[in-house]
Amino acid sequence: MPTPRIKLIDPHHIDHVKAFYANIAGVDLATYPYFIRIYQLFDACQREIFEEGRHGGPYESVLDIGCGEGYHSFYAARFAKHVTGLDVSPDALALAEQRAARERVSNVSFVCSDLTNPPLPDGAFDCVVAYGDVIGHIPDYDTALKQLSRLCRPGALLVLDYDNKFHPGLFWDADERRVARAERERGHTHAWSFRGRQLDFNTFARQEMRDLLARHGFQIERTYGFDFFSFLIPHPERYQFSERMGWGERAVMGLNRLDLVWRRWWPVNRWAYTQIGFARKAG
Image 1 (spheres, rainbow, N blue to C red):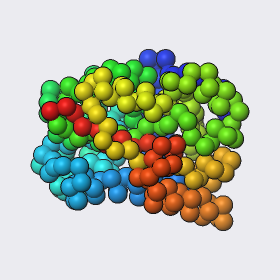
Image 2: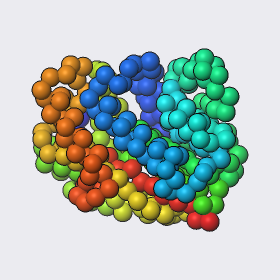
Image 3: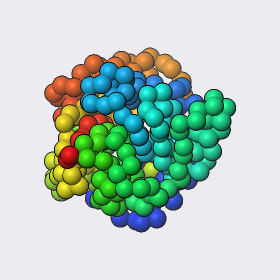
Image 4: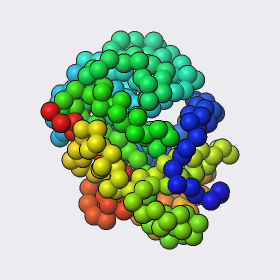
């Protein structure tokens, strides 16, 4: 793995993101231990938002950022008047549109665009979800958050996941630990490998993300964590992204199951690798 860096700077990084997700469009992610568990977490968040009403609502107009093939878009469409899915991958969106036509879902539409300049109207949404580390993929994340603020109505709910700068996995990676210590108040670049391809993305320090959101009119109300217990062992990704299901894979799934149970509480909601923030735009 290359030496981690301080933040993505290449404005053309989005082309790498497109190529990466084009390569996995149509892949059945539910066969991988990591995705089995992380989608259970996303589903729990979706239930809280749209079925249980724990974060306000009901919501009329929902934006699903980084929607891919529309998994979360179609879920939200069962409860919202209209859902817009936004993604940079035309390959993934083609599959989403085929599903919408096949299942005759009429209250969902898809837009192929970068979040830094989306062709969507001001104040169009009262709920925005961004699962899958969307913000971490964008070098100019400050502009992306500015656009999110523009798109959200006062009082809108924003739910986004991002990767935590400080997490237990640093114990096992001396290079990343060194870079993390070099600038404690800002995140750094981390690399993710899946199916033989690598994608870089940004991590964020806890206060850094709070400050970024506050600058654009959002206040975090609650944070969930995931991938805390799994990172207590060295390099759990070798099991999480395995295409087999042996004892190691089942053990790591058990650790991720603990993450799900403890997601609301310390230390998981503070030190877990993946953070899900529920934020509210000032009304």
